[in-house]
Image (cartoon, rainbow, N blue to C red; front, side, top):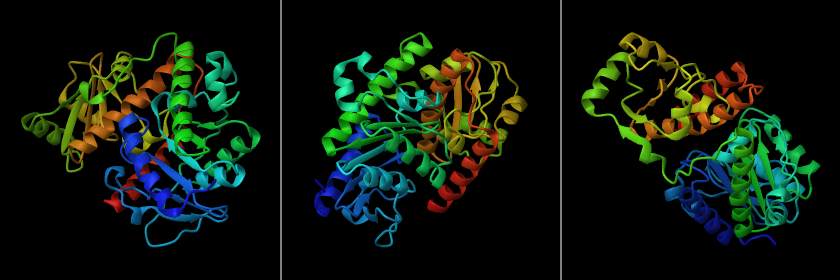
Length: 351
């Protein structure tokens, strides 16, 4: 049953805070909506912090054509939400996440077909099969169409993986949507472990692996990288970044948010790399890996540098799986570059 508009807005705000606490989303990566009638839903706005959202910022969107009410711009993925409500009359709450395990697993581009083998409780909540929508550039009609097809082809599934991107949880209500998102992450982690041949490290807070660069150190890096856009930095030794830095090779993006935020390739340099080698590695990205140690991640302020570290860890988890399996392609270079350019343009505009 659809929510009353005031309750729907409050639940969307509550969900944003809960998702941040749970680690299923970070910053504004992902979006949340609630149905308010057969014709409309409310959704989170584009590019605004979930910590401080107000009811006035939650946008009313029409399911039929994605037009919206008011001056606040809705999430750019509103079309994905609209398709969920259009195709599933029993769906009243939708969460789109970039959660780590599901995102990393999405690079396979294939469904999880044996959900019941991980426990009957998972099949009860998620369905027997979790489909994977094929890749489309973020916020495009192609992405909307691909997700729509996955939902339509699997009418009993409550979750959809999105190749190179993330996942969608289709809930009958607020509580059910959270159950779907959490159980999807658990199942995805178990599938990932089976494919990678090792357990996913339990990390409750990535900041445990971050060291903010001191002003003196940052001064030298600003000199190296001409850094008006790289005014702050962190060193990250988080698990998958450290794993991937051991290969001493360039890491291509297997997730589109890594391409968007960090760049289209992340170089890896030796521990004794010269200033010029580090400088060259940072010409086209916001991060550089140091062999066997971790990565230097930069941003316009400490929060943005930490965001790069966060998305780099998730991207490294996906890249590690691809490295183990050996037959998975990264996001194609043209799409990765376009994702990056669009993100930078939109982000700069929002800023």
